[in-house]
Image (cartoon, rainbow, N blue to C red):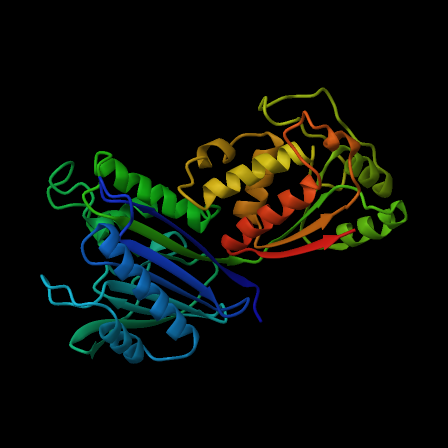
Length: 391
């Protein structure tokens, strides 16, 4: 087992006037070290293309996950999906990246723009072999992974951006490489890189995309644990146990909640420094400081804001510009969890806060449990490894 992690993030834009996207990305994890990622681009646009791409991506990812060959995948898709009467073809184009043991990437490409590999922030030309399967030209590659490698998968809507509008022949693959090399930062997550590229495509289309466009980035990075504690334990006799386990964990430590922060300060025998309250964001309570703790914040209001950001992150990531630079507690937690962490350990105290039982407040019973549960689900969808411990 190595210490690498495959971070996957993707974003799509629909063809102007269409309610559904004709592209589909499917991600299946074998275990903690292996993933199958498929980007499929259905023929045409709208509902029909969406069905074609979804079926293609799900069939391929499931078959690859179960160890079947590419030949089996292509034959199955051809036999399963309906034939397009206009083009006389049965399925969408596709790109497959199989991450094996976080050591090797197997890339299989059919008729999509070829995967871009950035290594140390610069384009890296990898070798390809051609196989003909059912009269289809398939490109196959195997690449040994390096820390920081970023694989960028594209549907053809990305390279068509701006055609006939801002550009004569669209945004060519080489132009996309130049753009990504220019904006690349090693601290950017896969989702951030995909978002920045798809936003540029949207701009080149003048806000009215002429085709569905999808960008899926796979970034290879070192594992980084982050630990978050919220709420005191139900039994006060468990305080020392909870604190000992929390602070013994490797990685960054975030403490949320007033009572929890006080208990953490007492355990560490350090002062809780609230300073002069500074409301960076009027909707988020101010942070505090404890020596030995990376971040100290308020509890449920702050975590609720983080959950809001997490749900948006999984969709269009439109609020990235809100949390990516601000200094309030919710934004800082979002950066820790979304951008830095690969493994997240939650320590959740079950003690009931009487203040949260006020029916006039927009929060209900067991609010911590619901928030942590929902946030955990969102983070798992981001590809994070989650462990929740209750006290």
